[in-house]
Amino acid sequence: MPTVAETPNEFKLNNCPADGISAVKFSPTSSQLLLVSSWDCSVRLYDVSGNNLRNKYEHSSAVLDCCFYDPVHPYSGGLDQMLKTCDLNTSQETVVGNHDAAIRCVEYCPDVNVVITGSWDQTVKLWDPRTPCNAGSFSQPGKVYTMAVTGDRLIVGTAGRRVLVWDLRNMGYVQQRRESSLKYQTRCIRAFPNKQGYVLSSIEGRVAVEYLDPSPEVQKKKYAFKCHRIKEDGIEKIYPVNAIAFHSLHNTFATGGSDGFVNIWDGFHKKRLCQFHRYPTSIASLAFSHDGSVLAIASSYMYEELDVEHPEDAIYIRNVTDQETKPKTSGSAS
Image (cartoon, rainbow, N blue to C red; front, side):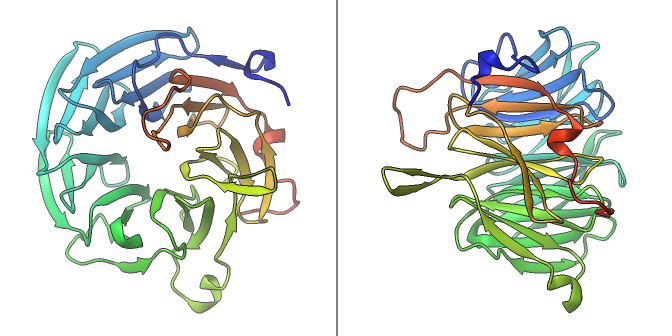
């Protein structure tokens, strides 16, 4: 299997964070700009095509997630419990608001023009980016571990393996309350670009493909599968699946695990399309560019074996092809 150095369609970013990488997110309009949050308290903006660090701002503690509101206004949150934004043109930083515990997730919903934060304080908060100011706080059944936006809906994964579907235009009630179909703690949820459903991963080498339509005939299509497991000396080692990222055009998705592998899947046809070479350590986060031409891969130790010697944190930029990301089966996946 080729190593990183032997892969001509991939390179490592310069000036990577000095501690764990919590999230990588591409600009909504460009495959050139990549936002990265880190346990080193920084949020960084990279120019991927030039392989340079273009901008950087800081929190007072580890940053657990970030997102773009527009190409020049990122939002970020983390252990300092504060939601921050920064004007990348002027470098002016603004504290937008806060939670009562760490902010674990930060997402932007373009359909409703709202920034959303999910926290370990068991709430989701909405923020109007125009002012910017708080636009409501909504109680969740447990600590928020992961969130995904699909159209005008928000999917929230909490402690206790709970999944909630909210309508961002009417937050007066929960649209759907679900339980994860996986037995172990939820690690990541991401939504299909065609808005039909979502993919959920757990800490126990397993992924579920779920559909939002509650009708029995659609629910019959949901399934789960094992992945990110490695047999060594006859013993199967099972790894957390930390990251999921969707290809916006093909509705295929990448998963990244603590085994250091990235797989590309065709969820509608239940097929693995490819597996990349093994990366130096755990895959902590993944992001496709808006046009699906580039995949950002955060190889960053997540302290699964506690504080041991580990490879340095790194971000790899991989130019992906249709051969790797497009469904092989004829017919539409829509």
